[in-house]
Each structure stands twice: as C-alpha cells, then as structure tokens.
Length: 586
Image (tube, one colour):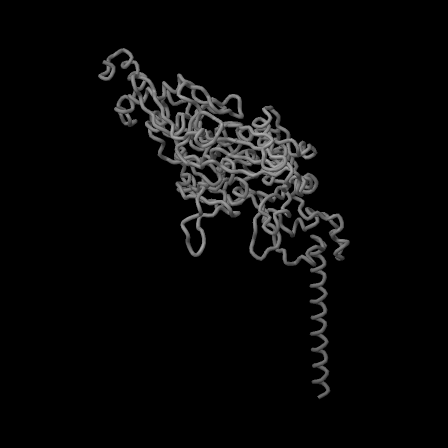
C-alpha cells in the first residue's frame, strides 16, 4: 500500500516536471519569436501577413512603421510611429531602405508631380508653356484660375493624396499603396503586391480621356444607367453619379483578359528618373514591342521583376522581349530555344502564344507608313464635347491640396457625349493618330450675383490611344470618305465637280455658342485648323492631305480589299496607272 502511494507521488511529480519544462520552453520560444521580430505582434496578433514579399517574420512592423519595436506599452511603442510609411514624404526614409532607386523615380514620375495636367491647364487658360509640379503650386494663391481649377477639380487623383479624406473607402492616394495595395478578407492590414489589379488603375483613370473605362467596353453616357435590374440601375460607374453604355471592349481584354500591368512596364508607370512634362514622354510600351518584338537575354532587372512577381518563370536558355523605345525588359514576353513565343499574364502566370504582326500589304505599303496602329485598329473613341465651366469666385469648394474648403468653386457641364470612329490627325511623333477634344472649355466667371464677370472659351483637340483596339481594322472607306475621320465633324460628305462638299450636322450658333464652326470639327474643308493643340507638333490634316485622302476613295470603290491584285505590287500598279496603262486611267 505504501509502495503504491509512493509510485503515485513519483508519477505526479514527474508529470508536473514535464509540464513545467514544456511551459518554460514555450515561454522561451515565444520570447525568442517576439525578440526576433518586434513586440508589435503581441498586440497586433490579428495581422498574419502583409504580402509574400514583406514577411512579418523577417521585417516585423517597426522596420517600416518606426516606433519602439521593443516596448509593450502602447504609448511608448507608438511614439515616432508612422501609420502609412508608403506616403512619398515617408517612403524616402522607410521604403528607400530597400527601394531607393524606385522611390527616387516615383517622386519624379508624372503621377506624383501631375506636371502634365497642370501644364495643359496653363496652356489652355493662360496661354503659357509652364509645367510646375504639385509641390511648386501648393503655396501659390488660389485666385490663379489654373491653380485653383487644378486644386478643386483635378488634384484628388495624385498618388500621394491623403487616403483619410476619402473616409473609410480610401479609394485613392496613399503613395506606394495607391497602386501596390490590395485588400484581403479578415486582414486589417493592406496587402502589398506587384500583381496589381486593374481596379487599382481605374480608381483614377475613369475620367478625362477615360481610357480605363473604354478598355473594358464602358462609355460614359448622359443616360440614366439603364437597363434597370434587381431594383436598381445596372450601368453605374463606381463612385456613383455617372453611368455608362456597354460597348465592345478592347480585344486584349475580350480575348486574353489582360490587365493594365500586362502591357505597361514599371518604368513607364513609375518613371525613369526624369521629370517629364507630359505622360506620353514617360510611357514606354508600344504596340510593336509585343507584336514585332526584339529579344535578348534576361538582364538583372528582368530577373528581379520575375522573382517579385513569383508567377512567371524565367527558365535557362530563353530570351525575353525588350522595348524599342529604351530597351526596357518585358519579362512576361518570352521566346524559348525552339523559337516559340509566349506571353504570360502577370496576375496568374497563364501563358498564351503570341501572334506577331503580319507582312500583308496593309502593314507594309509605303502609303501607310505614317499610320499608327491605333489609327486603324481603334474601333471607337469616347468624346466629350463642349465642357461648360462655371467659376464662382466667392463660393467655397474643397481644396484637394490644402484639405479644406477655400474660395473659388467650379462646376462642369458638357454639351454632348459621343462615341464613334476616331477623328484622325498628325500626332506628336509625326504619326497619324486618333484625336478627340482635350478639352473644350467655355468658361464663365462669377464674382457676385448672377451677372458674369468674365466669359471666354478655349477649344483644344489632343491625340491619344483610345484603348479600344480590335483585331479587325477600320475599313478603307471609313478612313478615306468619313468626315469625322478627316476631322470635319459629323455631317454629309460628297464630291461635286471635283470639289469636296461638306454639310455639318451640328450648328454651334443655334446652340448658343460663340463660335462659327461645329464643336466636333478639328479642321474645315479648306484645311484651316479650327481648334488648338497642347503639343506644338500636333495638328489637323491640311488641305493637301484632305484632298489626297479623299481622292483615294475613287480607287477604293473598285479596289476595297487587300486581296485585290493591285496590292501585291502596289508600286508597279501605281506606275502603270500614272502611265495610263490601266483600265481606270484610260
């Protein structure tokens, strides 16, 4: 009996010893884990991850947020802490520990400086070529029309905007996280990623030339959001107050579901280290970079980008594409040892075989060498005509730079919105490109009461890629005998006694506007340019070009298909025609 009790005591003591040892070991392990990272996780234990590229087990919290990494008292731990280290004023201290080159480029990028927007406003309203950055106009008086307009109507969309002013939605701003931030269910911390969804881009790129909407087949209309489904309007642009019509989306989205980042390179988006005046100077990617690519061995940047993406393989022996503009890597377009070319989607790594540009006559004819890809392959273009801007000098409106209401309120109203085959003109590179209003402002300034203090107008057209690319190009007739394409505007075009006659649809005078030409007219039939451009080298077609384009229509009536034998050797066909040796020249 005594012996049995003795053994029971030994068992109990042994069990307690094991429990104490295990508990002590667990305590040490827990303390070691905290010490290895920082004490922040003691309170913030619900934050499990902030993305695979920034593991908490390596970085902890204080590495990026500052504060006292060893303190467990809230006030002591949070002293000197930065809630959002990705804001550009903090990123140079925190993010630059690992990303110094990127931070320097982003701070000079067009999305951070907004020089392009401010410069175009200066050109339009003040008639001067001046491209200051956001930082340079913060201290300027808001009685400057350009500065005030930008601060009230545009500055909400710069990447370093305060997220807090957008309430809980935090739809824009935040610096690096404006693009690289994503939400994860049941995770209170923003996830950091390089696999950026297009929804991040559309937070800002849904107004102005509206390329974000157009790419996904949405045209902002003046309608009512119909059809009406499930007790609410169905075609509402995110953010409310605006509606869209559903049109053909860009072929890259329709067929391949390519996101914005699948084409746009990191240097094209985040900058190349130079402070460019305009976005087109910073953009790197061009159609030929993928459809007529140049290949080379992956450089160190390509390897780093592929490693960070973690979805796209870079196997030994393959080559990657490089941009024609400045030889930047397109690491998701690859050619293997057998010459097979694959394009990988950046979000999920799905490969697709790439089709290269054909050498058919429509791509190789000398007469089409000045055409940009967009001139033929853009199916439609959103155009907002006649922007009526009312400026109330003594009324207050929220200032997106000072983050408080200040004097000088603005309201915008458009005359009419249209989608159609794009107007063409000579773009800034000398190539023929799509043009649309960019923009047309009829400005009325009020000081007191309802009597205007000043009224004036500034009408501009601008070139851009509509992002409505289709595999099938526009027809020959649509370019050579369409008044909208020529820049004349909508109306009736015909030829009488070898003279081009055009009758416009839109009458500006009858609409109460102080101009003698249609709002949608870039040029008249005599080749006189009717509206301004913000880039000196851009222009409408001149009279000689209009006559030349239209004169080809008589040939197109019979030779409207590129399968026609005249296009097999067009130079020979043209020579025979000029020598009077063809049936139509006799």
